[in-house]
Image (tube, rainbow, N blue to C red; front, side, top):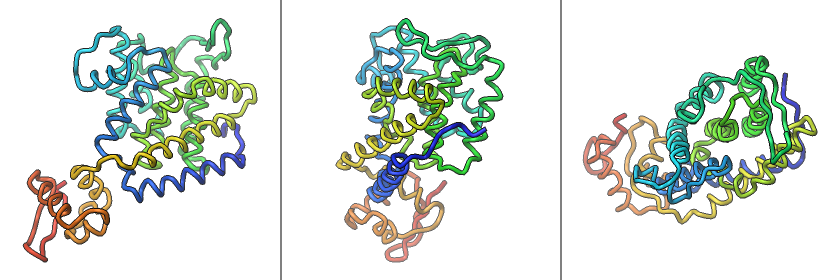
Length: 319
């Protein structure tokens, strides 16, 4: 069955705004974010998603863990960060439409933190806010059919994937398939889904804006539960995604390096041979001298193979 929700004017407006911003991201060559920005946003993503679950490590401490430096903090919190780093580093390997891939991700994310990481729960579970139980999850015997239906919807329903990623996030939290780690897993998997919409989503720190709006996040989850529809949750998360893209576009002064341009051009040109002129036409904001330096460096680093000389020079990516 298709999960219950309605396409509202607000949802249509937000999807249109997001699509326009994704066009701007591509024009600014930010669809594969510069190395500096990727590292910064990955740290923000991990720190924010774990802080929502009670982790105590700061941005600086998460950065130190990422750089294999010693951090003075509770062992459990450090393990949570190390696991999250490992899970997010593998984000490009996960097939968003497969349950077994999600189970593998949960195993990585929760390794050493729960007894059955990567396994669906076999007991009943309720979600508490303070002393009150706010949500009773479906019984364990329903988990497998519910998740298979949800993945079938994700892969085959005609609605756009941007909307379906939000629906999946809500339904995943409603099903609550694991004994622990459901919140961080739901946020991770929405990123896995969104990455197939546009590569920029892999390093867009959506979780940091969710953290800033944490009370609203839980409030809208409860509202969706009460309505029996994920509509308000879709509206909320699309607003978060739209704001995240705004933040990215406002930070366009991030320095784009030679390595960044060479990586970006590969996504455009593939294995075709190209000239320096082709490279310059793609990166209109750089000088001829900069283009020459980029291509020379990539050739020295065995990223590009150079053929010919002078005006007949061409390049192609080695692999």
